[in-house]
Length: 335
Image (cartoon, rainbow, N blue to C red; front, side, top):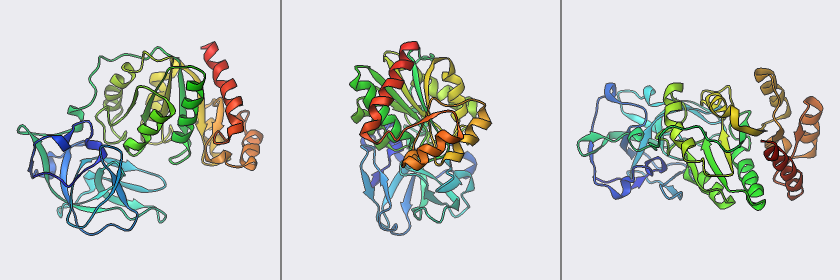
């Protein structure tokens, strides 16, 4: 048996090119990161797609089969759910574009209806259940020595990935060798590829670390991402995207703690100006720069700078690149 579509989270296991069996397992044996085989129960709504291992968005049809990974999602603006919420009927939802599977228990009215699939079995390779953690990076743990530009958010969809891409481009244009990591998001390869387009090399995300999402116990998260950091040490600077926000269950605070000694510059991507105040009050310190959705207009920039003692820039504007470069280069020179 071979799936019609292998989703993006399978890319580290190369399941498209691998021979495997599909065997049903009782829910008592399920674990986070298990690769499972499921069948689409009805045609998804128009525009709803999943990403394959090459980063291409593909449309699913009723009756087609997929391989995804069991996981948990706690998205404030989209979907909430977990594989632990699956009932005896074996129905799951595709909770992220990258192919994380679980049963949705709460959904924003503004999110697209998630694809429903029916569990048929676990992917079994050489007699063992295939699990993401078995295919994650295994380099010796190490703390990165290069300075770090840390990109945080006040929530999901605040503009972190776009901001990280612009920062990467600015640094590359100033002759820095940039490595990047994305330790938040939906596990989609397209976000990783966007950093590659900007000039970062190498680039890793939490899928490379063997995680379906970063909603896992903190000890598990720290152990999984240390090999990611170990592979970034040859660069001049690391651009690290974490979140969604430090206070959400995505282990953003753990990344901040792991990288704190090496952070040279912090960018907070905010959904609105008052969210910046909330993050400052929660953590007791200011970022070096505010970017993201709240800076889309001059009104947002002005309000941020009125509320907090911090500069704000709409980094999507070409005119912002010169002051952004000045701030980054000064911080890195002092690192």
